[in-house]
Image (cartoon, rainbow over all chains, first blue to last red; front, side):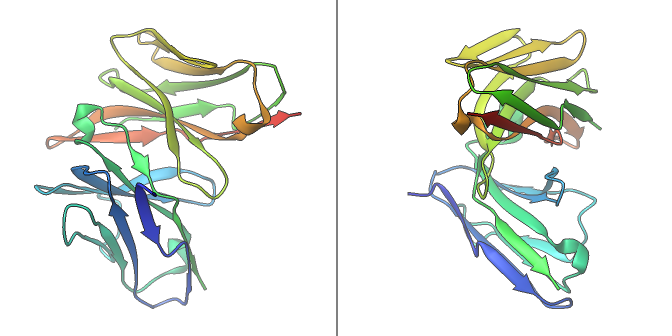
Length: 115
Length: 115
């Protein structure tokens, strides 16, 4: 049973397209996140979200938008894809918010390649 | 904001030897320091963490030390095994303003354990 699952695992698409990555967690956690890992393995937070608040990293382009239909899901929608969007995107969840020192549980990532 | 430096970027050790990975952070208010292990094709997984009121924590072959005065913390792996080969990330949690906290990751250390 995968605690944090994301689909698809691989996504290849052309510039200008719109795509979505789905994430689900079955841990009953309150907070979910999206991280981006670039080609140099650097992990950077994009969004954190619980049922009360969405916190956006100000460096994330507004072409990226998280959508949460319910507490167990946080999908990532990307408009007008660019070459520089190619990366591995990780969904994560935690029992509480980061202020609680809650450990993050990561999914296995979605490798996005924009051609 | 918080800045986390991690060294070395790559580390090769013989099986059975010890491995040490070091991180420094910039924000003296940071109070939580987790370490993550990322195996190929998978998401990062928490292996150990330490809070600012503790100087050292050990879990079997893994230990973490924290020096708040010097603002650095280290991961120690003893009796390394081939399955320890992975990329290891340190992180530091700090208040980022407007009621939110941010977990800043180091750039990772690729550990190779040679049988």
